Image 1 (cartoon, rainbow, N blue to C red):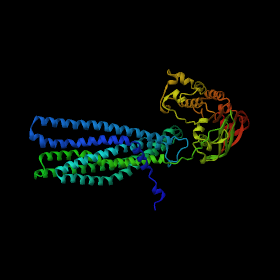
Image 2 (cartoon, helix red, strand yellow; image 1 turned 90 degrees about the horizontal axis):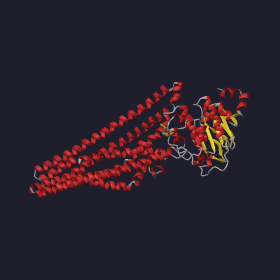
Image 3 (cartoon, rainbow, N blue to C red; image 1 turned 45 degrees about the horizontal axis):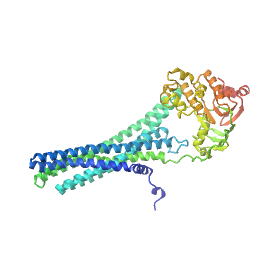
Length: 567
């Protein structure tokens, strides 16, 4: 009796079936056109044989004209059917690859991440690009496989009409070639899957290095990090060489076997013509078909390899698409009320953390350990789902576990210290949707006005990907402006001013307090300016709140606090 696991379809195979089902119309049209192309290609040497057999005997201009016209029709059919057939298939291929890229990216960008066997963002990026493209290739593989089969069948039938032995030779030879190559293609699939995994790991390592390059330089860890990447990259290179060798052996074997079959057909036809068993016209047709049949045979023999590559890529995509979510978000939306409550949360370095930010209050948290701040941000941003930690977080009196993540994000914005800067303009980075009603105020509050004034284009100044043409302080202020322009009911900022000077930091702190007056705001920071601007300060030490007061009172009465935040 089969187990449940063996009865379930493999995710990779299911992905391929979905791709084929969604493009059945394009594949039928492409198969017809490509089949017509292969049939017309096969008809060319057949027509030449008939011309030699009949037209040359008549030696009339009319017969010659009909022959030339027939060849022109065949050539036109070949050209048009190939052009429009490949256009239909490549359009479907490109569209399907786009669909899978969007689907994989959507899974990778879900507010509640999926448990995709520990895949990192760099690996998911590789899956969303290379693997999506290779999976979509199955849409072209099937029609090309069918059309190549058409060419082989037409050639075999035409040769059989001349002599049954020639037709049988083509059929038996084709079956033998495909049997040998099918065995070799399995190794290509497994080797390719290993290579894709190692390349993805190398991509993930590069992404991690780019993100952490500046801190690595700071404490001298860049050489060790580069050494780690070199080892991962070397593994990927070795596997790529292995795949290249396997592909080379496959291609060489296919070419050699096809050449042997073509030579066997030509020699057999020559022997039959020499013995008078076939005519000269049939000999011309057989030799022409033997030369022509190498192209569809080559294409036909390469298809198993592409099927295995597509299946390997589909299995890689299934790691992301079939991975269960860490948690299933609730269906509710936050109730009226902008209070934020953290009740007994244990996560990472947090040890039963408990505090409340009342509606309209501006509260600052001074973390003595940076890791604790990062763990708290992960919980509030729902990057750590409710099942991943103990305790409860309530927004507007309702638990996060009962709320949809989208509703949480609409109601509460958590802006990390390393928020991404996108290619575009200052304006599109601050207000991506173009619907913010507080964009000028956000620009002014974040002290981004000097950056806007510095460039002739103002807010339309072009920003490179990751803000490569901006300084660290400018990127940070741009990120802060985006958070303020969102004008959410609850705003959480994590170290929003670490890269700006003290004077600018003082102005930003005052501006945030002014702009967010009456709106619930939580700032996690060690900045004296922001701590001083807050209504009250919570001291986060060893995962719990150990003190609570205004910044100035804490400075006056708490020596540890004074040492931690004084600059």
